[in-house]
Image (cartoon, helix red, strand yellow):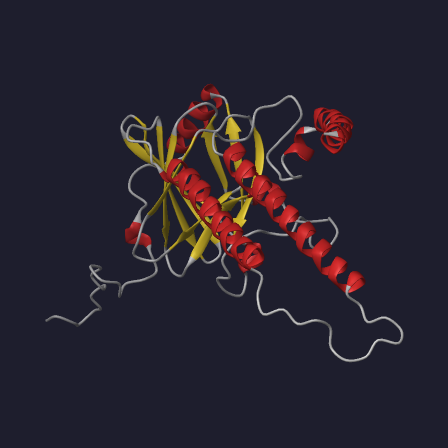
Length: 300
């Protein structure tokens, strides 16, 4: 009874200390210093907090397992070390049933737990909007991006064509000119469905603050559904090694209010960027289901 009381009295200050420490954490600390969070502001997208929660919780559990393992290892090293004057082998043990059960059950629980929570969150994140407010096609190419806004102006597609990152004139070497980067515009608060395709080789669409990326394969289409929740400019890049200038395959995402978004797509239409700018401009012509262009003199 006395030992139980002592444990209770010891647990109280520990619990109070943890509560105070956690209450004083900033948004960055609570989310493991991952990007996409600002104090007093909503997460960048509707999925950002879910991804951060899965990541941080996993690390907390794994850190606990690591501390326990390291502690037991150090304890065994210290307690069972060879003392001065000792010879021969220590008492040998063939097995210890409780420990064997512990070492079997606990890892099984951890693996099943990680699988269950990951599968749950992945299913939610990968569920695509059936009736999105905005539909966009993103085409990756060596080494830039094309953005097509589907049915954006009077029922027609409008588009912007990107070039790879350029160095800023008059700036230190390696400084990227942000004004020339391809820029994807998204309206805040809208349900956005993005179709991801490649014009040549494998690429990967990664917006860092979204905590989410998806690969882009030639001849196939992947989809991403998000709801942007905070206005701002967010950096993006290709996350799949795709050739010589992979490091210059950069872009920006501008999350803006609906009025600014509408004004931007109307501006693209006024510039003449109207109509189809889809897969017919892909570099590949030998994929299944794609007709190779007929050269002059062939087929006659």
